[in-house]
Image (cartoon, rainbow over all chains, first blue to last red):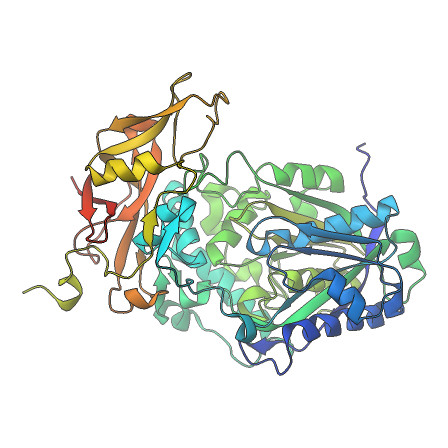
Length: 388
Length: 149
């Protein structure tokens, strides 16, 4: 057996602010970050002052030292930031927190993400610049600028190689919106989506309709990682880390879309390591939270984690299979990035914890093994598996 | 009678970020060659591996003896996307437009991004053969574009 952190570490507390439509948070992003962390400590039943470490991932603008100072933390023992763009580090930040507590660098490491795009500008819009050099000089002058445009190109190629049709992506969006209708925290609560509305929605960039693209929201989310031993003494049911992995496949960052294996979400080398550590297979996963920057990436990441064969996507990626309570693989049961909120995927980790605690608004019956996939198509990416 | 969006002589309206060679000189030759209407790709002088985008060392043999080679400018569509939602003010009236990812069979199948010249609404299939078009801009740069062969 590998020497791993399996079962040695747990998520002991989760917290989030109210999730707001983009630009409508009544308070600044930094304050949202602090509020989510305070709530996570409250959920864990520890004092805020017990937190002594921070782990986050790229694009996090709220400096750990500033947070530690604002919260009046007496011990600041660990800080860590996962490299890479976008949401690839959601699970990786938990993994880094886990490594820190397992190694004894800190006792309670908080993983957090705060976003207030009204304050800082949108992710989906190109920054104004008169000239550009380096890797982006090969793309921006051609109007290939936004994340949707970067990833649509990969997804189109994936569709071509494996005969995947739009309906697989519709299934992801429809399941997310279905689940959000049970979740009062969801920004799209009370806003159901029909298949007709999905297909009639405007194209953003083919093959992505409006509903294939993640939301942009304001809010903050946090979870606290500690040793399994400490977690057992706390009130919430621990969500034990079975496995976590991060990484990237061969030359995935080759500029101007030159990754040798192009039609991929970048989990092909990660997934075997993940399941080896967990000592389970994809068939053992009860419920999955898979990061949706764009629906196509979800489908690719399901394939690469072994949930279905690339050439069997159209049979597996159906609304019926993804929708709680009867689906074979309930997917994004809080509504996820598409319909709960876009917290760069950290909200998916919180939902994975709820599932093993038994407190989701779309609770999968007897869910024991709950998995998160973070950030398809970026580099590096990460995934984790929890059990109750 | 050309429609308003095709009144420009460029594939996309002016006002998008203009490409500039990196200050350290890494891709100076690529942009200067485009200005001369030549398509060049970086190639290792030791192991003959092509690479794009350019790098200081060959990713295959790690030699720093990397040069540039002129290639034919014939390629095939590896992937494509039709953009409907403008994310830059200059593109507000330019949608839809086509972005293609072109692989170059005579340059180790390296890929380049460009626009496909012509009607953006026309159907396009992966594998379609294309050839390079050099789009000279008055500001002093040249874009590498593509048209159906």
